[in-house]
Picture (tube, rainbow, N blue to C red):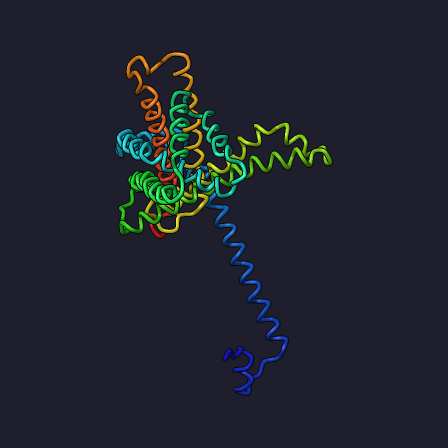
Length: 337
């Protein structure tokens, strides 16, 4: 039986007045409001410190980043990531195709329209290899074979995320104390989350543009969104990429309660490095280089592997940047923190 504070005191013969209880409740509400405001100020303070790079100047930040890249052998770790990415890429896309197919069963060609967006960042030969292989795989997957293949695909795809976990632990200078099954569960959960985010991004892009065009006939302002469909698609894609990277930086490394806002600099750096390096690589292949002359029929596979290497390096750079800013903030706050 629940007994209130007032009932206890009244039973003892010292029943306080209603005014006193009103004052006590007002004090409790005031304390709750102060706690909420304090949490908001703390979150904003951490976000501001993350944006200001933990008090580090740009020269010091770049120096520390280069130093850690050399000390942690980031090129070698990026090569390891590219190998696991190559093994996990097609299973991951198969898993995403299952999610998209279950949500948009009416539109069979929707998934390949979604994959076509990768052509904006991938080299042409690598994209042709990727899309062709996906069409062969998805046409052969039917019935129970498809269901079993989906489970296997999720397991293999999570191996790429598991490699990211190990790489980010090195970047954050933290030992891996979690059990193997817990690491695998984290990897699978992050893989599923990324698949859902991709499906949600596709939903928002396609449905949002369709709704804008339909409503534009009645509200002229919405018609502008339909005309700016390319800009809207890029905005939605970048937003969901930042969200996915923040999830990875938040839950992949073995850190205790890292703040969301502390992951923002690394997520932005990863996105900028990835898009910039991909554009430079595409420009090089289009104007100067051709791997077919050296590797023959394996040229497309080598291009894909290099692109995955660049992607892995971008993720590790983001992790190193977050670690530098976080450690600078800890030093600034002192050992008592």
